[in-house]
Image (cartoon, rainbow, N blue to C red):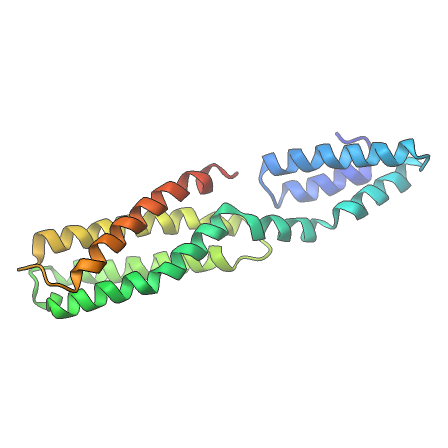
Length: 192
């Protein structure tokens, strides 16, 4: 592919770690660097080693891509905003005595379990350092968060006996988070 077995092996290792588009870009640059070293008079193997050294090891390259991945950035943003939105909802649900609403216990328990799964998926995506694939869990976490925010809004509309003032910040906070998440999800999903 690139012109030398060392480079081909390097790119094959990267292909197991990174999205195909990223590997294609790296392949172009690596080949160009290898050819530049060949033009400077280095033998093929030495030129390949020099080009690979300039680009870095697969672990270094992967770590750089993971740090900049859209999934990792989206997961971090959602985790940072989560406590604020959670406090808003907690205050509103507490003041409105949500435990007295006509919601079945399994539904409330399912909501809590779903929230834990979403937070776990986002935490794995946000803290990934070596696995680009793990950053894609942000798509699952983000989609789950949209569903949970929409469910919380629907519950307030359908089950709350009367709106209470602490809900005022929770409702727009969830609506804003839904909008921001839906805006970020396409970048996470298309980043393959």
